[in-house]
Length: 585
Image (cartoon, rainbow, N blue to C red; front, side, top):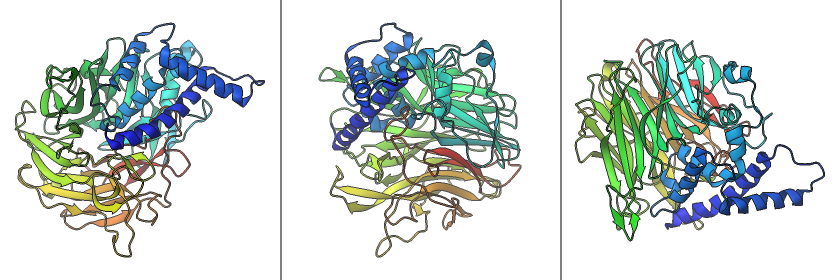
């Protein structure tokens, strides 16, 4: 076990214990008024112990899946740091499944027939998506990880939403972690829509990490991580809207693997706007079957792979056999090796670009690279080896940022437009400013900067990375973190990157939202978006992993090139919980 994981486990055990206790309270609707606090704690502790040794009395298909998820945690090479936010949340749920299963499967109260068929009531949205604490004080108030698609006047913004997770628990249908909002005025105002339609099978989870794309003003695509407990599938789901996002179809699985040996993680989708019916979706496959990487000491060697599937008919049918873009085996000598954070984009002439982060390239915890590969045959093949754009430093202590929010260095990918048509752009946060840290498990803390690189020859070579955030650092100026860039280019050729930024707090706790723009990718103008900064907040929503604060946001320009500029969202903790705010830039 690596040191970073050991520290995360220590923090996680405390977090899971709190989550289990709260889950125990949720599984009984109301605690009796005559029960003391000590009695409630004893009951919670008893339920935690029971969850470790007893299976639920009434089995449902999802129960076996949750058991298998817990078993995967003990597999050699498993590390929650190698999972996307949605999958970390899913394992968090599995760890306390006995405590919360009745509410998830049966619902807090059986909805009436009218309630089951009623669509969520739209709520006006200008800056912030409101939360509802009437159902619970322990969950239902977290929205983050925004994904935005813009076509003409229409915008759809998807995000992780524990509020819809609480709401769908009682629906009698599948559970959803996916929320969304729509705009018909280019992102000036939004209407909150709740979750896309869920499957009728209550043993299914639309488990979050959403990504959205659009083909025209009417047609929007929404992909999510997905778990089918009935059929034993971990995969990627696709929901389609034909009316500008007002409604979405029930999701279908477009890529799936057996959930007893695979975790399919971190879906992304892109549209070829030269041929709008052609779609591509990437994801990471965590394979514990041993079928490709073999076994060592009687255990399967974990395989981590970036894979891609495609559709030529607007999402009706998809590639039967996924194409492997990159893969690594985490065996002896490469125990820290994995790939994650895959992103896909399509150039004007149809070239397909996939980028990702490679971890453990030096055999240790900190060695990391941003890599990219191009396909010229509609994602039927990708050359090997991929191009390494940059070798980077890990963020924080290689596991968390200051404030114990889970960290990553995942790249953001965009294709140039207008006068920069066909340029390929990448941005990421790089832990390139290191300072000693006596209590870090690695002995240091890596402060992160936003970095940018571009290619004018189809990704074959890349410019020297440029620092995007322009705050002074070093000497008398404090070191601070800038992280999770969202990159886009518009019809005027302008490049924009929005990101979280701690520059206004010398102690490096409080966060702002900044956006930076450039015409050439070499010099950048920075603009503060937030009027007030907000704190890091983790560990207060029982349906989230203890270190969850989101892994990414996206920024979008008009995919139809009718309008210049950018729209997007981000998560703000200003009100005390994580809620989505929107921006135009």
